[in-house]
Length: 72
Image (cartoon, rainbow, N blue to C red; front, top):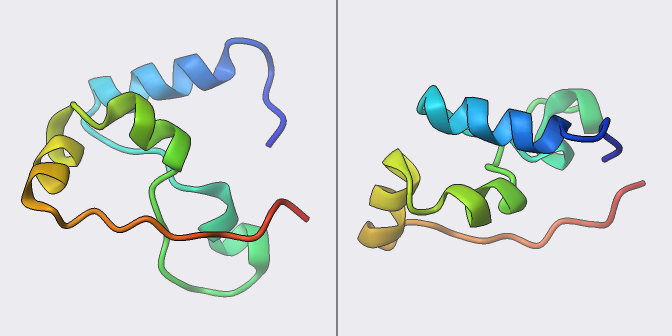
């Protein structure tokens, strides 16, 4: 995904501050045209896995990683 310089860091900081997450762009309906289950962006998970509910989920062992096709 192509973002302006500094945008990724701004999104990460905002999501962490607000207690939210960043969805994986490959799992959102707008990307593939089908309604489905969104996933948390793996890059965001790696940055924020020690924060909020992501930390709880990891400690409980309920985090599942999935392989997604490369960008189209």
